Image 1: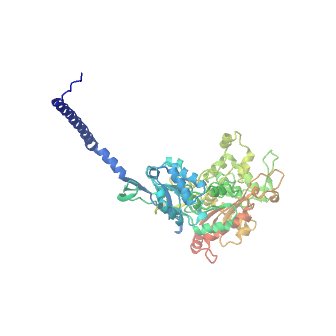
Image 2: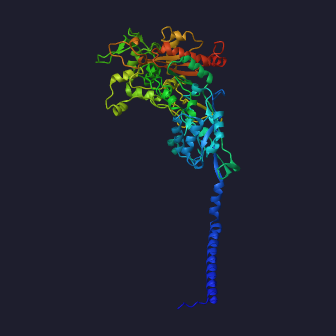
Length: 629
């Protein structure tokens, strides 16, 4: 049978529709309530958090690096300034895949392959977020144009103008002023991350490093509004940076040039000090190098040439060079003997050309193998008589000799503001026992008396010993900074003055030093005979290789770099010293024949006028000193 047809129940359908509508309305109402609650939570309860987050997306705080202080010589000649330069910077957060960006830069600018590794190394250095990292300096106009044309391919890449350190006189002050270079990872960990934000260079050597805190200044800030691509739309707030302090040095550019000319391209060092003030007037270490190469990053090739050169141009001979002082130390040894009472000015020693310790066969030779006969103290200084000073050192003994030489600064740093300075070495019984595990032998004391053996000094220390004799024992540490923003530096750790029992001994030793140049038998009388003033000086020879007992020094048989170093120290005018000088010529052999003429040229440049006469102010001081009781 056919199925019956069911009739539609309209009432039931209506109830079903109504129930579904009610469920839908309730669901919509519940969802609306959830949305409203969420909106209330985000916009009311977490308003401060999201407001700040939103603000940070468009407002950034950018550091403004301070302008580095300038460096001048004593006459206002600029030695270190800042010049504008265009640099290529990359902001990692904006660049996305910054390695791909670096590849694009290499292609666009057609750079050599080795630059790629350098760029990546710079990009990986730890920096603050959104801080641009400079990867290429001193862009040419063509490079700037290429970057501009391809800007769409280089997200996060900008060409920025900044001030870069520049040294107008180049290599002439490389070893004194020093240079700045890029901050490395080790330095970054030690620096104040706030004050050095935005700064990419720091002092590496010389004055630039020692006075880094004064030269750097204080960082500034500006709040900038940026768009979604990170470009600056406007500056909202700005705090200006405080520029670094300018420093005026004690150095004199003209005297520096005269000293370099006097050295004549030979390897060596010259230091000139004003005894009354401690001002370092000239500081020459040759050969030198161009510090500008290091400012924006020296190439591997250029650095290898400097590092591997046999002449060691990077080596600061004035502060780091350690040499036996040779006979230049004899005036200080004579003062020690006089003050200790082991000799008097009239004490005489017979010199047959050698010296022997009692009960020993070994002969300690005098440079004059024929001997000088009977010599007193002044004659011994004039003739640089080794035998006299062997005997004097033996009478003093190592303990007193060590104590007196230490008072003159031997074996310790003497400068006020030269961080690279080596301390040298003034040996003692304790030093030898600790380092060599051996006792001290009497013969070792003898050779210390003529500046040989274990004793090691820097040219700066020899200049300071000379300045102390000129200054009659008054200690003033040599320094390079004359004023820092108009304020002179202060010595927080002054050395005690050298006070002798008989102050007249200063004059007695000075007379012996004058005789070196102005007496007929003086070792440098040929140089002294041509001077327009009196100079008190002392020659010296520092052995490079040892000579056997029964052999004589033979220059022709030695390689050039195995020959003796030539030294000469002196101050002038002897009556009222205005300059104290130490000269060291590597492998120059003769202190009197090679180093003394160099010292004379430096002293002439400081003391004489254009007519070759003693400058009026110095001539008056000499007369006044001579007339005083």
